Length: 195
Picture 1 (spheres, helix red, strand yellow):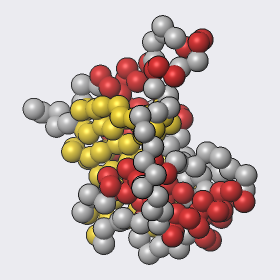
Picture 2: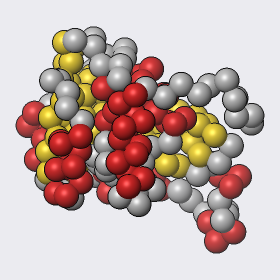
Picture 3: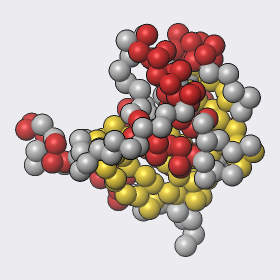
Picture 4: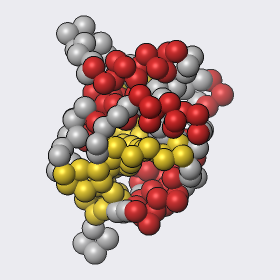
């Protein structure tokens, strides 16, 4: 898989938050490849709410806010207070709310039209709750997966219960896509359970 040198555009908001993450020696921000997909996906949400689980230092938030539509509210939640405070102080946007806490406290604020789940627990052990907070037709995006051909030796030939859950869930239409030669993401749409 090639990396295209022509795809270099980074929104100013994203550059600012990438510098903040770098200054904090944080290397867990979403990649540019994931961010570019976030822009396309979140920009399709015309009204309602977008949820990001795992604010980090606001790089994913900045990608989403670079494309957010006027009638959409954005909520990002993280367990680490110092991260949330820094993001609040550096990423001012009238449609954005940054919350310190457990994402499950936001369940009552749903349903959400788009969810970017960037926290390991949400992807691996809290999947049913994630599906519950999605509106029917809502989209879930999860990155930071390693394509099977790049698994370390100790993983090879073993089941991947996280992938199996998301890609085979009866209430979702889901697929895995490559973001780079060594990184993939899962996209899932919540189906109408009455069909």
